[in-house]
Image (cartoon, rainbow, N blue to C red; front, top):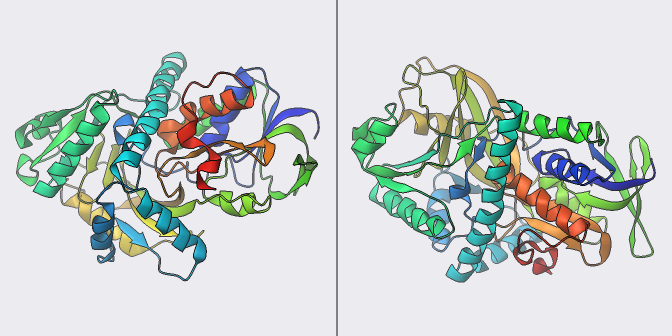
Length: 416
């Protein structure tokens, strides 16, 4: 292949969003992925498009919480113990990012690209008549402890100052809004009325179709083998289907970005955070609003004829094994709030590797030492909700347009 403007490596929601944005700008785009399009971390996430959830992982006070969670083998956070200098370096940066100033900068950056993305998804849905399951029913965060209520009210305070609407609810108001929740089981919650959700794989496929209609070539089953650098820039890439060449390259490979960037001598501190989701039968008292169980960090998303439950974060290497203890913990935690069908039949169990940067903000920017390479990776749990905004910023930088968002918080060299 030759004569392409942009070659995108990675066919998840970030990669296809970049392809859609660039083809809309009139660029000739090819996208490759060794898997089917959308079958990595974009396949089975909670499907949330929720600017209220634009919070970085390293929040002030997270260290103590993390240690408490790690003491519980089935808690919402787990760090796989291993002697690994990359892990040690990541954790040191993670701890340094746990400060008020960094948190406020990160929330502003994340809410900016998330609000833009929500508006874009809404526009696409109005044009496509439900092609990717978009519904704007808001998001309900519920708490069963005083500590959880303090946490969710603090989150409300932080995101409301960045343009996200929300309101506190009493237990009775939680039940009135969502009858599937017994008021006796919660201390209260916060409702964010403007948030939305969609089917994650359908969203990827929708954007992939838009890209193809714009002229992009999407090549699943195409594995990157080598990036060849000449004269201070990427000259071409080798794949299992031959050599491919373009003017500019976008690395949108999520949790797999560090070893690929290492081929080029570029350090990308992304750690894989394994998450789980499962689909269960529709309960008799079916929730109609997506919910977050604050203490358990469990996401509950209604679907057309079933319920998706998602949660946990295991900071691991590129490890895609399934811990049934984690799966069972999500099921038990959900059953502590909802009346789930008994016996409970799980229709599908999925796990995916969320790409986590140590400061909780994705990397979106050109690589200084390789001017024709842009990295768009490291979106932790916010890939779907921030993908259109990420694509807009990436395209602005690639096309030398005035950026829609301040690129500084996302720059690659902040980890140098």
